[in-house]
Image (cartoon, rainbow, N blue to C red; front, side, top):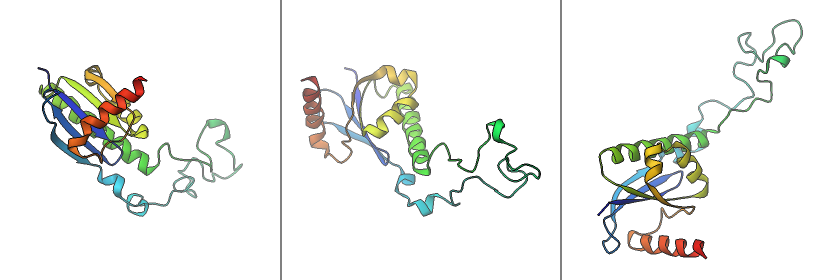
Length: 169
């Protein structure tokens, strides 16, 4: 009988369970913690988020160059309203999703599971999905847009079945 892995995840934690059959109890395999998500902003950001780095430097495309102050207007360069593409928290979440995706790919290549069930918080599910390898995506049999990371092991299967029944109505 094919082995199914069930994953419950959010931006701070991912739990991995193995299910050998519907009548068999779930086995917890792994509990990953995203330490970066637990840091306070002051601990994760070493520099103040400013409009641009090295604002008065002549090497900074947004800084003064002599002559007209708006030399970069047509170049599409960052201006004084520049914002980074990701916040530090979003970056940590992305790194954690990549770590999970790598673990799933390696485990699949080792033949540790054949089917996959993913239950993740709505915000994290999209990030995780975008980082999964195509082979891992092919193994996904069900997805739940719900965070069950805090559910006790003996109640997890019941919660997933109840959520599935509710979504089929």
